[in-house]
Image (tube, rainbow, N blue to C red):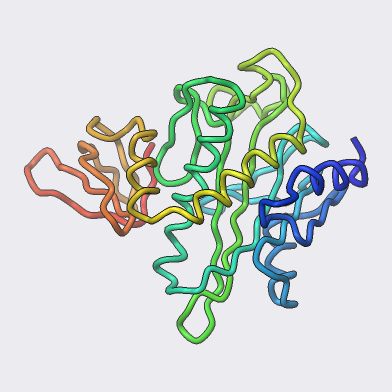
Length: 257
């Protein structure tokens, strides 16, 4: 599928969603998030979408590198201008995770779950990761770029050896080939819907899809490894962890291992 064909198909699918106006579809780029941030600096509006068939320097959370084979993955960034505080902008990660879960579950019928704060998993293997980056202006959120990296059509041998047992594609799970435009449209339509919902509703629905709640987890934070029970995610998006020695600890920045 060429970038031109993909552009025309996706533009048609996105009509009426408020997403993808404008829509940029590239054969190759370094990072769709970087491209979206550059467009934001030039005044691009809310709903701008950047999609690439190949991403050479994509990045995930905590500085990890995320790359893909040509056309095998969904490499997509969405520019939002929600206004509000930087704290409120950070909560859009939850909107995005919920949107992807709804879209992929609706498309496949499979029991995916969300790993706090930004991964969509099948069992313990990642299908989609989300990276949210915000830019402030005068203490407010000038823009938020939400990057989606979804494994669509890779075979097991296409993943680097070091992540082969921790990643999986929709094709591996379903035995069929997945269309980039159809998948992008489904995710963006669900994202548009979550943006109309209250934060309370989004968080409640997100929690229903988080398999770790109420379970023992191992969490890396600030150089420490904590073994605890994940009691809840509070209204600010922070983890509430019950440590073995009794106290409840509230953590914003961490990784569930």
